[in-house]
Image (cartoon, rainbow, N blue to C red; front, side, top):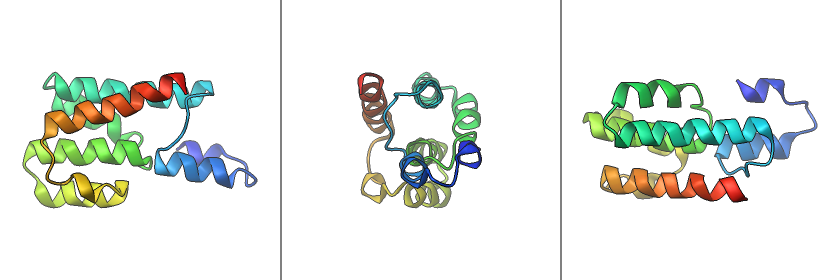
Length: 115
């Protein structure tokens, strides 16, 4: 996990990574962002398993947890979906339509490319 490689003096960066609210300024952060975009694209293309495998690699990031929540909503596993919404601090999206929600996540991730 990326946070294991962070020095003790990087609490602000660790917190930003855990909340998923980071800007894509470093190669590692850009790669994480691209992985999450790929997961959304896979989900929108109907490849649930590949999207799920990808977000599980980054499940300590809030945005990955949010995508994870949507994937379980698509799967029909409401309890697991709610767990991931809580983990992502995105309970306000529980009732959202999955494709529209994934599009919103994708838009947020794309905005980080230029941030």
